[in-house]
Length: 171
Image 1 (cartoon, one colour):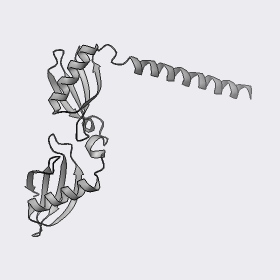
Image 2 (image 1 turned 45 degrees about the vertical axis):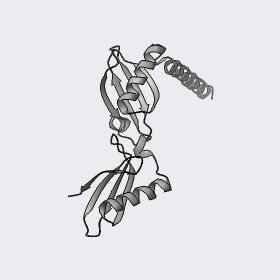
Image 3 (image 1 turned 180 degrees about the horizontal axis):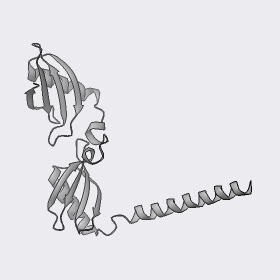
Image 4 (image 1 turned 90 degrees about the vertical axis):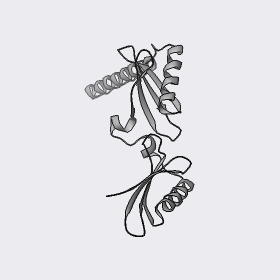
């Protein structure tokens, strides 16, 4: 009985120490980015993705920056900048983790669904909408799949105002 209490107390102490250490690490991660650099990096990243909100700015080992931005359509993008705040790369969070985040995880409202269906049907001359989802493509807010009255399948991309950007026959 004494040994089991010792194990439980020892385990609790280890868990507590890891929790405190993790909290300290999390609170200091990215702390070496000064407020001026944080603002410049954030502004450069937001401009690169076409608008949005900065979620996080971190400096990496090469004196460059990694900035997470949530775009107005809900997608999240990680922007890598060099030490001069020039864009090195951009990638959606889904590319890194393989998990659904951002647009893919965002549920569409009923009003969005109705508007996307109407625009997609009009673009293809009528038919049945078989799939609608928020898009993770740059500049595209929604994607729809439509089977027209002749039985052809179409992929339709729309912007946030439900304007058709492209319609492509599915081969």
